[in-house]
Amino acid sequence: MSLSNTGGHGRGGQAGRIIGDVINHGKHVFWGQPNTHYHRGMRAGENTLNALCARVVVRGMAAQGGIYTSSRFLKDYVQFMTTPGANRLIIE
Image (cartoon, rainbow, N blue to C red; front, side, top):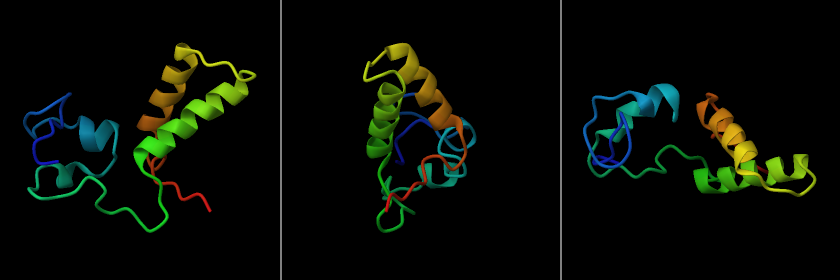
């Protein structure tokens, strides 16, 4: 995470606030630390972001009778990623 750009995509500096303010709320402080794993802070049983995004796709498809559309997915994905706490989900 120490190489990831917090203000945009790819590698870069830590000056931006997309990470921490827009997505991954409250986690900007961890991005500039060397040797910090991106799963830092996850609790036992908590799902990774990849699993949660797969869930967003499936829910969107279920709401549309099993049909996938990119417009529905993008709307749901943006909603999910920009809602504080949405990526902290434990499915029991």
